[in-house]
Image (cartoon, rainbow, N blue to C red; front, side):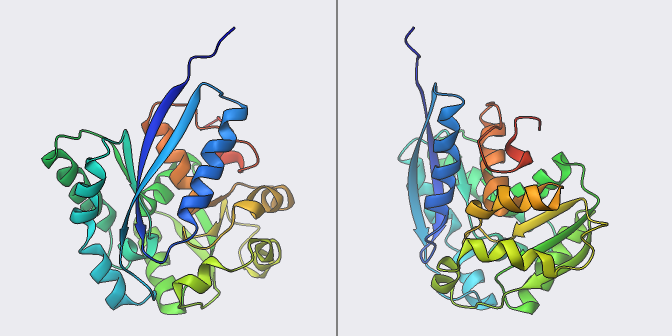
Amino acid sequence: MTTTVRTHHVGLIVPSSNLTMETELPEVLGGRRALHPQDRFVFHSSRMRMKRVTPEELTAMNDQTERASVELADARPDIVTSACLVAIMAQGAGYHCTAEEQMRTALASEGVDAPVVSSAGALLRALHALDAKKVVMVTPYMKPLTQLVADYVADDGFEVLDTLSLEVADNIAVAHLDPMDLTEHWKRLDGLEEADVLVLSACVQMPSLAAIQAVEDAYGKPVISAATATAWSILTDLGLTAEAPDAGSLLSGRY
């Protein structure tokens, strides 16, 4: 019996120095074909300049959202997603709603009516879907930026019990961190017994996919990342089963 393939065009708004979004998202969604061979995902990117994860560069990058969205509109995507979680969360509580509306408006100006996802909004949505109340998280950021992320998550109703900052300011260096180091880093967090969810990478640039399932198996509670949350949101907003192998319970198809 021949399977009818449905092609889903995914637009990506990517920081210019990001090396991970265009690898981990395709890996998650490509791996999903083993379970759902009828769905094929094609990715189209537009980039926004950012080299160092500083408040000044993050703000300047956000100013490029409209331009990047309009460029993607030309590809007529089925959904558009943006990455740089901290760029949004550093702007203050609820800014993901503002950023997503900017994307939506820019797309609509070019005749594209497509859902939009920000990695910041996706992380919060995933935590709600998992019915989390208390969370712990690992970030690659300097401590002041990690605190901004923790405050942003707390403002959405979650208790952040502890954070671990790896303190890597150069965005390219973040991309080259070994994801398997996370299989040990998470053990340094306080509050693991109380927490409902472990955010193993609160950053789409910090590779973590290779460690997600291993850490979840060791921890015994849901383990997510900005990337798996974004993949989950993409699938959910496309009306597809949010299921992919070896990507943690969030992508088990139960949520």
